Image (cartoon, rainbow, N blue to C red; front, side, top):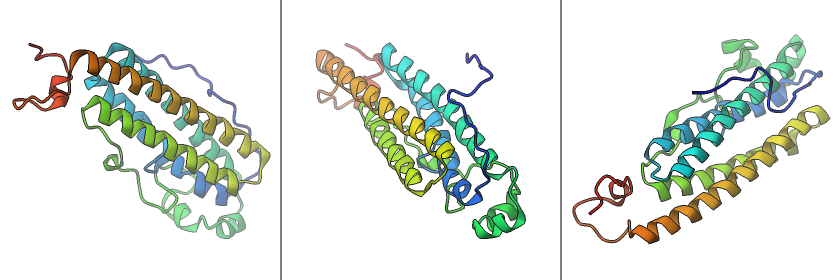
Length: 208
């Protein structure tokens, strides 16, 4: 069960409309490497993670990613809530505005809507953890690209916070992978077993 605290994890106070920047930041709302995909990835992977500590880690980070989704959505809303007609045109926001006005819709910067096909859930603990390490690095890179595009200090401040959290998540998943490897070595999960793939062996339901 989730307990919703009615405030953002990090404050967002953007006063200057900038639809150009909103059109870029939206990739972290609904893009392949964005916060929605991250939340769904981790909250889905946790079911087949065989170690309780790592189930908890995936739940914690997945829940935090939902909070980051809210932060990014707030940024997009504040960047577009008072935009003028000329800013829509000059900011290249015309196509988005046509379909969504100033609504916050999950898509990437190229205009493609969110697809769960972009997230990896393999059911194998080592595979999923490697997927997560790569995902966190891709998200970090995206935030750094956004920082290079941004010129508003209020926007850059929030982007820096989000980038820092991606680095922390990467570190936690790296620790989780080492823990998983230790447990696999202890129980010899990945020894050859012709009757069953390692992912099923890892669930612990078929121990000899």
